[in-house]
Amino acid sequence: MLIGEYEHSIDTKGRLIMPAKLKDDIGEKFVITKGLDGCLFVYSQKEWQNFEEKLRTFPLTNKDARALMRFFLAGAMECELDKQGRFLIAGNLREFAGLEKEVVIIGVLNKIEIWSKEKWLKYSEEENSEADEIAEKMANLDLGI
Image (cartoon, rainbow, N blue to C red; front, top):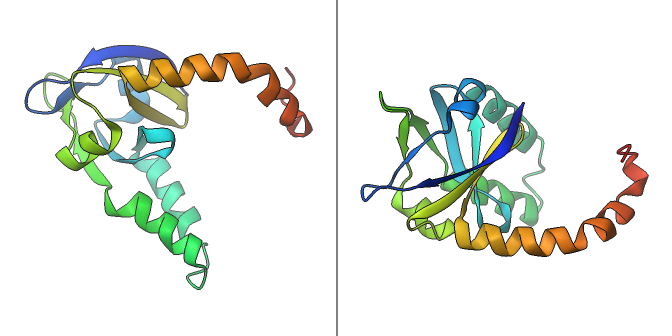
């Protein structure tokens, strides 16, 4: 299970170190793509296959389904850790997520999210102030909290 929050820096070549505590679960090879809320999603190969299978069930006759598939698949790229535990984030993905220097890497159950530090701080501040309201709206999911 992928959990935790880690701060790192992207080097001048666009490489980022994978936090050691996430490395075992994500694997040496993984897929990175555009995510929701302005971050990047990182999936292990197994989780990416599961995600692809879900996308395959979308009806191609539905315009929104096609748009969502394009959003996730067009920018997706396979990555591999180098000997120093770093991986390269393509320029288009760095631009999409606004990644410049300081980033926050978070484990979110079955995937990793990569955020610009600035966006993460803003998002988490808003999220923390609305957590009670969100939990109340999702009470029907029986989260046990």
